[in-house]
Image (cartoon, rainbow, N blue to C red):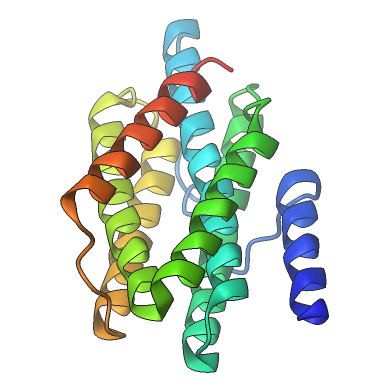
Length: 207
């Protein structure tokens, strides 16, 4: 348990304070970075900040679930998903830098909340409920990313390439969780998750 706590602490510190390193190439690496107006740049920056917060929360959620889960197989699957989310964290952070924008100042708060949800899901509901949280989270993130494809400036091809790649990964994570035996979450729990996500995206748009 002590080793698991040390790893969880290390994950939190790396997510919040270290430069994330992607294991895959950035989808925007070979995309022409077209000129954006000031308004377009601010719009893209706000959306990518929200996406960056989402990846901070994904790291926290998977870390909390991995700490609580009982199955070594599930723990390995969560770790693989977390590594792919680290790619997303690095890509969104790089895009924020390219846009001369910044991450959310409230990232430690977002991380703490997501970690608590992930740990509680694993401890109180067991592995199948924890997987259900993965499925529902990824479904909501997929819809959220699709909405960003509609909101991003048409000329921001780089951000669009990143969001598209992230969306494909989120779909795969949901499918992994379903195949591993996820249970459907009750409607009130889904509604709570949607409400919490709405608060996060609204605040992170500016802060």
